[in-house]
Length: 266
Ligand SMILES: [Zn+2]
Picture 1 (spheres, rainbow, N blue to C red):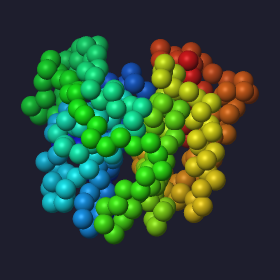
Picture 2: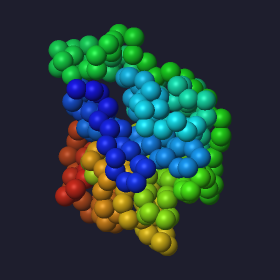
Picture 3: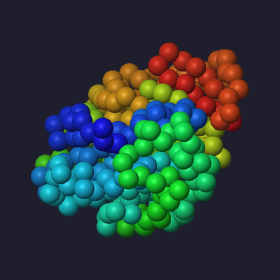
Picture 4: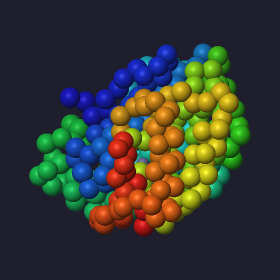
């Protein structure tokens, strides 16, 4: 079985899913998703995954067009393949993070353990695994339109999960690539760089868009998901922030469980 589960999720749109939860459930997420969006003149790769195996050859199996990487944010689980590409776009606030080598010593130890070993991709060596530093060649601020030829992605700033979080929206199809701002799983808002109240504002802005998003292509877990998830997350987040929801302590943070998702707060 190959490490990446690749599926066509819309016309010219492919999901590259990696089963992180199968090798290390402690992150409280299962799938890590990246997406390839193929236009007529070029293609966009929205996030590049964990970097366990090279993603570029798999992308080039699907398109011969030049590929621009669009990072939704700089967390290491979404930029593992950035260094394989020449053209990398990211929010200006998060460009410095791309140049950093995250400390993955603990994760490497888990990957080398008996629980993970049988599920790792062939040829993958946990001892030498790292997320390579890369460089942003196009610094975004939100508001840009990325023209792929025949299809256009609008770049929307949605800070909250991280300071320079971006979503990408294709108005014609209603596809919204959310990164980690929304997904049907455990939402990470407990980290030092998170600002949950700002995310609530960003989600409200996404909900007010005209035309509204139709389908969410999310940074983690099963996708696509119907856009009603945004409404639910916005409501859940406000309940958690205002003390109207119950939480329980976990290793990562206070966990609030809702029907289709959970929220981690510090
Ligand atoms: Zn993530």
